[in-house]
Image (tube, rainbow, N blue to C red; front, side, top):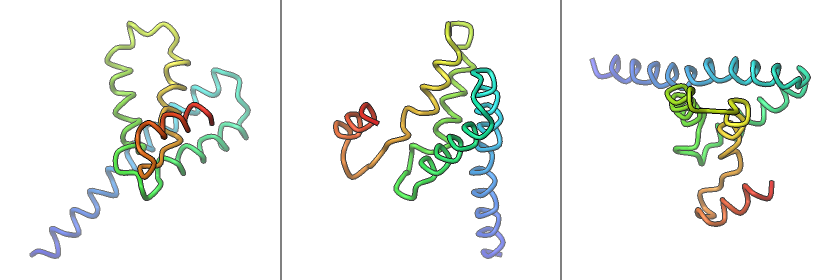
Length: 113
């Protein structure tokens, strides 16, 4: 029945959205612990990352995008000299993003925040 297919799609979509968070949050916590970041700050920054990457206007720059970036990170990990710096760059590279402003303005805004 069509209703069953629609329900399966919705469940699949919810599962796929949860999966990046389930992989990213422990990575974030481990990164912060290694850098000596307090539990409170770790949580506050995670909340910001999750909120920003979950904004309704984002079609591509989401937690799934970060998860994909960390896939590339893992693929090339032998060549990475400062894993913590690269991890921070991945987590924060699109935290400031407004699709209505266009690429040049977004790049400027990201560099100022």
